[in-house]
Image 1 (cartoon, rainbow, N blue to C red):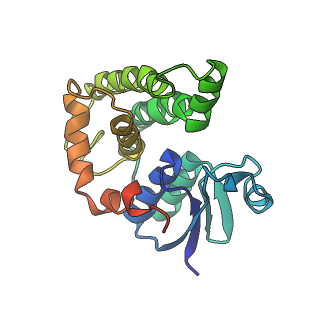
Image 2 (tube, rainbow, N blue to C red):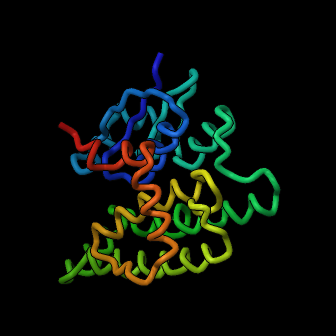
Image 3 (cartoon, rainbow, N blue to C red):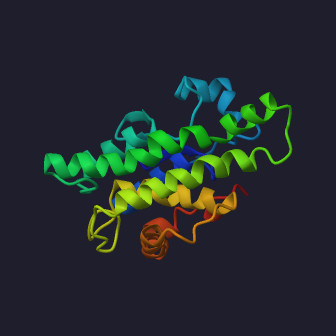
Length: 211
């Protein structure tokens, strides 16, 4: 039986998992959970994930939540090699990926930006200003961290790794919110390579807009 992925087309976390599934060559049935319509708060979805979040992946008789945990499961069970084996190199690659997935992404979640907009009394320019305020510094830090790796041609080596899976959804968001990217040569170089990789291209949100 094919895997089932409960996701949302613009969800960064879902985007990461779609890339990982494609890289692993795993066929899956997508089930759209419309975050805008509130599908994630339905009883059916809360039964899948009490956090009311996407993605949720059903695979190998398991029901998995949290994108990084899902990707780690796929990496461990499918031998994807998304992280180096050597402990210090692994820690550095994890830190690079986490700088986006754990530090940047949560504060730029649309629900967070919407709440900030409400607290601001719907101030003009929100949530665009909120997104740009956090995304650009986060990417500047990622760019600096990338300086410690040799782009050959992906973030941490000659094949896609966890950092690439985290970077590409954030770049989609950065472009969506009009973030200045002109002074990020390392990131733009990685983005260009990932963009033409079939696993990344097939996971792009534009290919998963609900009918």
